[in-house]
Amino acid sequence: MSENAERTLFIFPGQGSQYPGIGSDLCAEFDSARLLYEQASDTLGYDMAKLSFENPDDKINLTRYTQPVLLTHQIACLSVYRGLAESPLQPTATAGHSLGEYSALVTAGALSFEDALRLVSKRGELMGIHGEGEMAALTMDRESAQPLADKHFCGIAGINLADQTVVGGSSSDLDALAEEITEKLPKKRAVRLKTEGAFHTYYMVTAARHFRNELNQVEFSEPEIQVLSNYTGGYHENDSGTIKSRLFFQLFHPVNWTGCLQTAIDDGINQFVEFGGGIGRGDGPADMRPNLEGIIKKFTRRIRPKPAYKAAINIETIRETAGV
Image (tube, rainbow, N blue to C red):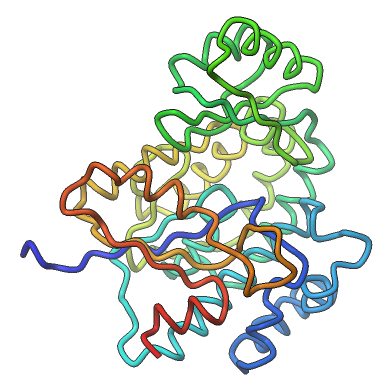
């Protein structure tokens, strides 16, 4: 491979990157976005645009709605970007954080948009119904977090960075864990996250068992490009049955995001492009910033040459990345 060869990873964020008004800027200007929102509405039986733009009864933060809202926005951002760019970037591979893995599979041609919507809608519903507990992000590596989590009956839910490990457990167990960190490790923190349950831990086993039936009803195709698996941290195999099993296990095992990123770097990925979602305290899409940017830049800060990072999460960033 030439030292200057462009190897791009398209990435998609997970829950926590939803906000009221998400996608409204895209649908105001682009037919391709409006069509995708109409497809989502027809597939799921409710008005995806109204839910995303107006957020009635704060439904956007209920897991059963959060997941299809984000998937729709991510694929809409990708569609608008491809429509605007004179020579759209062609990804070498795709990856998504938790829910975002489904958008990655859609992008790779392994799963249709409609089937992905049905799956994440049911996934979110089951996680909300059968899930319990809460989550917290610890400012420590997995090796340090594991014994603390075990002691307090919490599970490791995600490894986002070498010094950021997410755990899940009951409210009282997380309180006890946080108290011990404050007492014995004053330089470390346990930051509570806003979720409906202890996702990607043993609290999700029942939801996963029900979700297996949903996976079995959907047809997966062989990916056209490689897709990273949250469960293994490596690339999915081309076999559809194995992809389904990895998505099943993903529900109650940690999101190995550092593993995914390391696999990408080892494979020569030198550019990351993030699609969809957004975080921030502003009032709309223009005020949001990318969800995964900080993690990507921290992970790659010592890599030389430094991988490029771009975003396509609202009209402004999509135009910039498209070069228009």
